Amino acid sequence: MTDNPQQSESGNGSSLVELEELKEQLKATAAQLEAARNQVSELKQQLRGYPEQLEQKVRERTRELEAINRIAATVSRSLNLDEILKDSLEKVLEFLELGVGAIFLVDEKKGELDMMVHRGLSDDLVSRLLVTPIDNGWPGRVARDGKPLLIEGNGAGFEGIAEMRAGLPEYKSLVGIPLKSKGRVRGVLCVLSSKKNRFTREELNVLVTVGGEIGVAIENAWLYEKSYAHSKKMEELSITDSLTGLFNRRHFYRRLKEEIARAKRQHHQVSLLVVDLDNLKDYNDRRGHLKGDEALRGVAEAITASIRQDVDTGYRYGGDEFAIILPYSDEQEAAVVAERIRETFEGLAFPDTGLSLGLAQFESGEEVDSLVSRADTAMYVAKNSGGNRVFKAGKKKKGLGQGADE
Image (tube, rainbow, N blue to C red; front, side, top):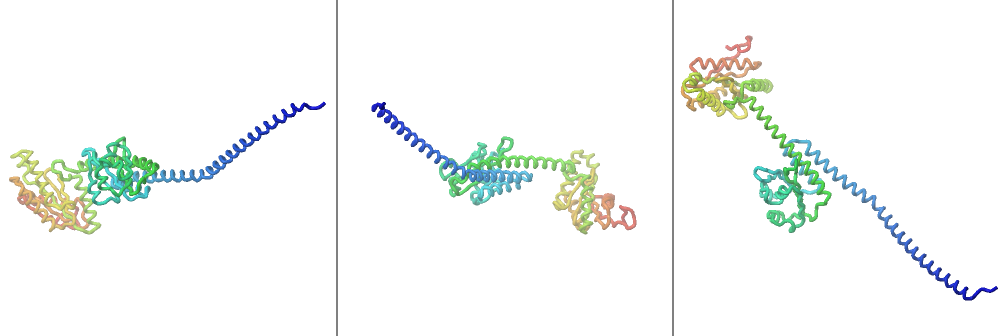
């Protein structure tokens, strides 16, 4: 039995079509495989660079964190405002590898910014920016808005900031960072560069973060200074006589002990004056206690005007008695001071009054009570001799108890 020729030709045609289709499919598959190979190659290339990129990112982030930690540690280790500002600016410029910057503090009462520290700025620019209104200039813009300010180039962004255009033509990049604490701007950090587009986003992020740390440090320093000033004021009140403004009796003994101890160590002279306001009771009876208080203040005025400031010290010893400690003074020098005090008070014109002054020079091996006793005794001798005069104490007798004089 023979095959049908027409069927044979039809079968062969169908096979050829299928073969062509298969070829086309193979070509398409080959193209897809080539594309896939190219993609794999690209992925391999990307993967080869990924560890390096990742390492670079890690290095950058590590540098940022180290800078933040370093600056935060610097500003938190001190409560001295000047140190905080100086060290902060130094560390920020070190991180940015720049040499020009400044820190301003906000004076809310005056509505001003005060330039506290600076580096790399010309004297002319410093003089113009030393004190600036908050409503003027680029530091003021940062203080007003409470937001970071980035200005690039010489033109765009500088409109309305006259001193920037006129005074800073050499700088192409500027960044201003608010120094905040408790939501309030305490100051402004400004950094400048002569290069355009100098600051990266990562650097700005670091500056914003450390700006908060510096702001808190400024706040803490202010609180400490306020607390210290209050404490100092309370201490001064506790050792000060409210009527005369001189130190009081309690502080007198403390200071005299210190001066005698120093005199023993350094082998220098110390003299003591004890002063009594003559006839105060009669003066009060005739003119009233308010006038008597004026006379007591007059004694303090005469003492203060007659002694060496920051060396000698005056005290209201009690009632109408006063004392003056004279370090580095022998009895001759002390006698000059005593007479000057007496004459100065006499010139203040408090009628029928005067000053009786007893003088004693510290002797080797003498104690506080002995020196006070000798000066006090000398004062009473002056008073009982008619008053309004100076009398020198005799030498302390050897072999007798404290306070015994010749």
